[in-house]
Length: 335
Image 1 (cartoon, rainbow, N blue to C red):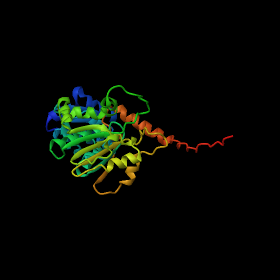
Image 2: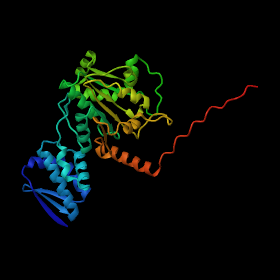
Image 3: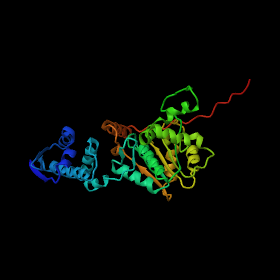
Image 4: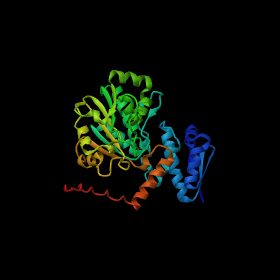
């Protein structure tokens, strides 16, 4: 067992890194099997040599983020520990990214992982961006944040949010109410993100003016969308024909973000996902980026990340059987 001492310039950064009631510190100690003490403006790390070295790199990385004004929470700590364990500690400072957007409640929206940072940079520098990844990686939320930022900067005149109306393994039947009421359940995640960014009152004002449009994908047919920031959510549930139709709606001065999770396709087994086809067809085309987020980029409850990893491991061991081929209908001769 060895002891490593780190000199500390500002104790407020240490307090931020350690977290409320030292909750962040407990994560570091538990994950690495070390003991961390704070005495006389120094941090003392005790444990096995390899574990102490990892803890030193993690704490130094967290102190760097705190010095740059980043908020440190349990998710940050676990992600930093993962980077350090993979030998990527030099990339920690890249997480101190620029603010994409400020929510209606004054909360800054920033990418929290390297994958999210790459995704946001792709949106900024490309006309069309495909964001592929599991639930909880911020695909939709960050895209909406980028859309609101572009709208506030007057880079676009409209925000258009759309998604295919496909149920996730359920049959909702005939929903009551007018047309808007019928499509609202499919579009609720997009509403939620917009409400966070703009607030309900501002959202309603822009909606009435036509600056914001939230509609099912079928409503995009026959339109040309100029000067718009367009987000197609849950794109794994589009057909090949729907995806082609959507991509050909792009007008001048517009930006498009397509998000989806190819592990959660709700189409019938005999239908090919338009998102899967688009990933192959569009690869290598200039001004189109394909960003793949992974379980490491999940920013929801840490159990979500574990669930995703468990399903990935299971799918590797139990590959899905191919869908049965449809047989031609039998023909009967009349007596």
